[in-house]
Amino acid sequence: MTKPENIKAENEKDQEVQSRIRIKVKAYDNKVIDQSVRKIVETAQRTGVKIIGPVPLPTAIKKITVNKSTFVHEDSRDQFEIRTHKRLIDILEPTDKTIEDLTNLDLPAGVGIEIKM
Image (cartoon, rainbow, N blue to C red; front, side):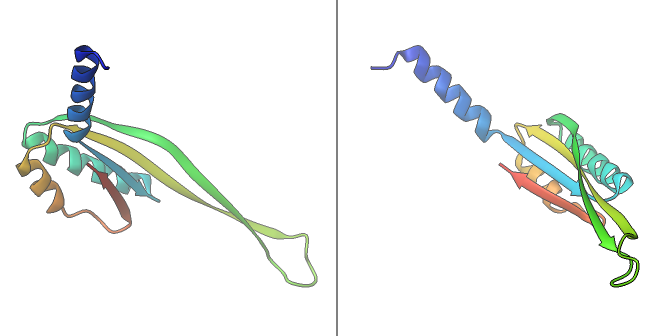
């Protein structure tokens, strides 16, 4: 049998999880991602909810090496890298107005958004 205190703690955890929106934003350009995050935070603040973040996550760096020449100069190579910048925003206890405003938000091209409720 479980104690009533444990049941109460489990119910509180369930309510916490349900009353949060986690937004993960990704982009290749750090200026664009900062502008987008600022828009998201301002939109959420207008509806009067509590916001945690934006938290900068580690930048993923993908490096690619390509041969300049196919036959004669095999030792000469070009190196390229793609940096993916990420930010994390938590919105606590969102209202219906908050969710509606966030879905109607217009963000620039090249910004990926992942929303978990």
